Image 1 (tube, helix red, strand yellow):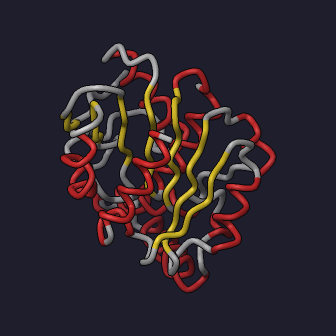
Image 2: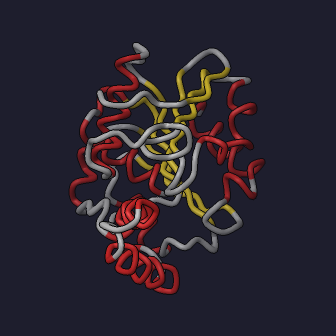
Image 3: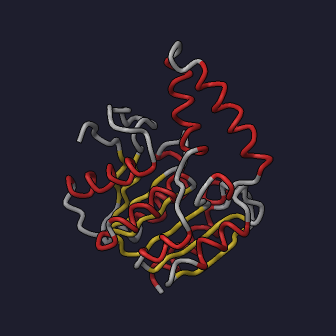
Length: 226
């Protein structure tokens, strides 16, 4: 593996791994880490090229991030864990759960999408424009290159076909905000195509874990323990 993840580790008990969204880091889960650590062994990771984790030389894709997670778990001798992913983190979690089903206990998908069409156009169009603009200058500017790579994750990834979700064997909570930037029909499509899933909408926008942690945490804990 060409990188070492930065991560926050806290608590004891069952393992739960928290995966943040695009352009963010483990700090996003400030409202979850301490609360979950009362019950579980929490690992909050900075994914490749995010936060304090280096970019490395491997491809900058959702599928690479899923393989990075496998390497992280192997390195730390974590054979199985609850996986909670937000936004791009949820997309990483879906790929991971399909590829390494034996390593996932409970799966929590918060604000994930199967492809760019699952995002509201009012949000996606500026992303696509920004990606095209940054791509033009990627060879001339390191900041433009980094920006293009980040935006590429939301334009060209994760490209999961709904029928592929049948490979997910873990009990799954699909959770999103009532006013999420992810289309409601997309969130429902994810839940409908995972055999053993529960669908929940929490009041708020895309960032319910950060903005409405009490309700979000309660839904997650109830799902894991019931």
